[in-house]
Image 1 (cartoon, rainbow, N blue to C red):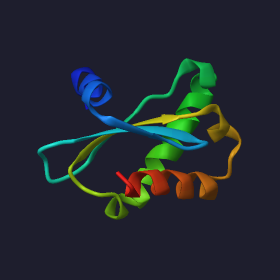
Image 2 (cartoon, rainbow, N blue to C red):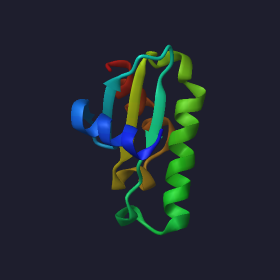
Image 3 (cartoon, rainbow, N blue to C red):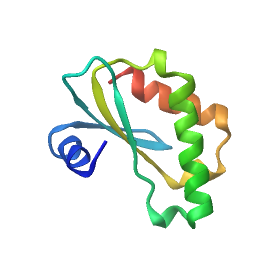
Image 4 (cartoon, helix red, strand yellow):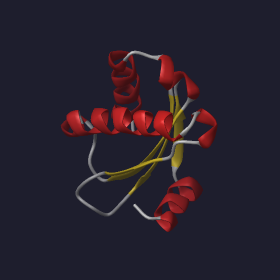
Length: 100
């Protein structure tokens, strides 16, 4: 996704939150969902942010078939993601994404 598409999701989409993530989503006209990740600098240095990004991408990659198709989704991790077990993150994110 590109900058303008992120902005469209923020402007006209909906938002859901949990203790570890905020997810913005908007219907697209495609047969598949597209994902974007936005990790704030406040979460840590580049190494920490890249680790968070890799963990979230892996959750999406492994569970892509369980996530509804036809959405543009932007995922914002919260600071608690750095201290939480991978299994708990997976369950939390999938719960948000399945209800899109």
